[in-house]
Length: 245
Image 1 (cartoon, rainbow, N blue to C red):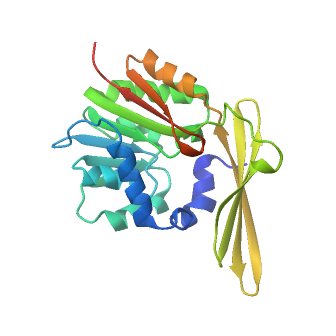
Image 2 (cartoon, rainbow, N blue to C red):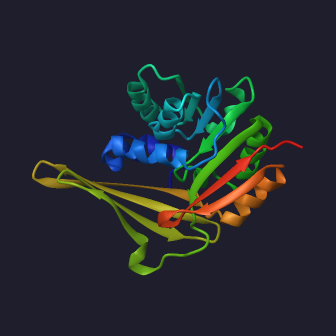
């Protein structure tokens, strides 16, 4: 079984844009996610996108006027962001986003870690370390936003563990989920047309089963004001604000 970073480098990275389907529609959805939040005024402000991927939220933040640092371990995804950013003030950096404090010099106004990226971290203690770094890096009035899938509250059983991600005439991507006590193992089964037949490739990686109340309480312990919301398709959003002492 691969790490999340290796899984994207060897398996999902090259097809991630295809997985999204209509990129402009996906970008509009990301912009709508941010519009639903009480973010600080953007003029002259900075934002950090952790696990930026091909930049749906980085682009949306830059379009709102933020100067964005976009961090991801998958270089091919950040190459796609680079090709799309045009003149927008986005700096893509290939790195482990856990090291983000080494990449920014000053406090940050907005930090996002969205799209189930948080569950890719290897241990619960790693999540806690990330939250500590986030709390120390947020400017007064700054906001941290994370969205992640709730694998902890409900355990899928039987055939429900097979999830069709996307299919067209050339590719079929199916996900299969196995549950352990503290993690799930995600198996991505990719079929691609090859001549008159199909070629199968499979890769697996672990995700943490993060309980929404656990995430909210860990951020609260860092002195942040926390709000938690349930979204569609089992996704959770947690918004934490540095309101100061």
